[in-house]
Amino acid sequence: MENVIYVKELTKRFGDFTAVDGIGFEVRKGEVFGFLGPNGAGKTTTIRMLTGLSKPTCGSASVLGLDIKSEIINVKKRIGVVPEISNLYDELSGFDNLLFMAQLYGVPRTQRKRRAEELLKTFRLYERKDGLFRTFSRGMKRALAIAAALIHNPEVIFLDEPTVGLDVVAARSLRNLISNFRRQGITIFHTTHYLEEADLLCDRVAVLVKGKILTIDTPEALKSKTNKKSLEEAFMKITGLEPDVMAIEKGK
Amino acid sequence: MWRDNLRGIYYIALKDLKTYYLKGSAVSWGIVFPITWILAFYLRNPQDFKELVPGLIAMTILFSTTATETVVINFELRLGSLERLLLAPIDISAVLLGKVLGGVVFGFVMTAVATIGSVVMLGLHPNVLYLIIIIIPSLFVFSSLGAFLCLTVREVFEAQTLLNLPRFLMVFLSGVIYPISKMPLALQYFSYLLPLTYTVYGLQLSFSAASSKMVFLYTLILTSFFMIFTVPAVMLFRKKFE
Ligand SMILES: Nc1ncnc2c1ncn2[C@@H]1O[C@H](COP(=O)(O)OP(=O)(O)OP(=O)(O)O)[C@@H](O)[C@H]1O
Ligand SMILES: [Mg+2]
Image (tube, rainbow over all chains, first blue to last red):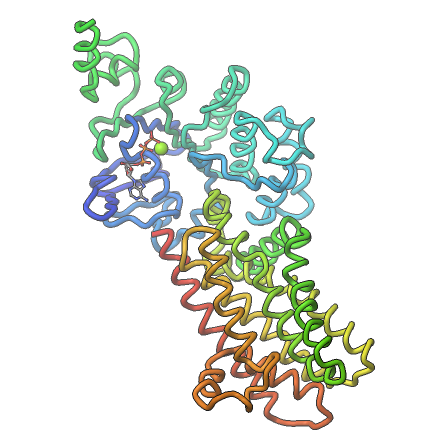
């Protein structure tokens, strides 16, 4: 199958500190790829490099067959990104934020309004479309950030902890949306701390610890390899976080 | 590619104009401040008021273009919304030029008000062509200077303080209120390093009856200043996302 994301020996250093340490992986077309790892593992740093917000120290990567160094603008046209923080414009309304994104992404003039309204409805924000982003709750901001990433019908979507702050209904509808995307052949690169969510959604997951990928496999395979019932337990075992937890429990 | 960038520049400038520039503080910095200043001089010396008009316009250009740049750059960098812009398929230089253009358009409106106001009130007959070829490049010069300075620091308040340095330096040393020819020689040389000097000279020519080729030289010099400020500004901006 066709590789939509191709990463080779990708590295990011901040001074002496290596945040991402020579990672390599491939994501196939139409796949939901989970990028898991504890806080500070380098997930966001990797997404930032793949989406053109940060330059790799070394290594290479391509998205949709386009090199992220030389063809980043063409990459950006075809990807949607939900950043870790919902950083849309406080002083613009929900609707105007989406309209502005549509303008920047070159969505045809005649489709901008309709597309923005559609997305507001999908994310149950239509009633508040004229409210300023500043006045939205955290979950509403998150939902609008996700909507903004979809405005130009991207072929690949990068989601950095999209469900943080979403209520049960919204998180569920996002999961449905992701399943729909998958059926349409849209590729999803997804980081999350909710391992149940990853287990439900992801075709394959990579486990990243201290900037290095420890393993890449299907959730099923990881569970059977580690002999665990849930992905969460498997994750604990793979990352080596398990013994500490046991020690704490024994100690009490 | 260039079409994407032009579209980006346009919509970024438009968004900044709508969200920030139409607010009261921008308008007060942009025009009330220069008028108050000039009024103070007028009260001291009412008969020379006509001579102050080029200075008034120059000050309006300087203050209005830089009025909200700390907000559109430093504040947005801090909130992360500027980073969100960079996810869009436009070059980082286009994002910066969009920011600069927002300042230019706002400055243009303020300057037009100041210019037309003084022309009508005092019954002056300026050379309109000269006015245009001096005012337009000047707007770009000071907007890009502001953007450049804002990008050298991190915080909004630092940028605000830093912007005051060229503002006041130029108000005093570029012939806005005190003629350059009456300054000590060393300061006269120094004033030639300041872009506002050429704005003031060019505007003085626009309001004098004489026609002079010098005005084109000033336009050229001002355009060069725009380049001198924009290139390092884009480099600084790029560096923030490395
Ligand atoms: N601009 C920066 N300068 C210095 N260090 C940085 C910078 N950005 C990230 N880091 C460091 O790189 C490491 C990886 O950070 P990153 O944000 O990628 O982690 P993450 O896996 O997304 O974590 P989380 O789950 O908490 O979001 C962290 O140790 C972080 O402190
Ligand atoms: Mg992160």
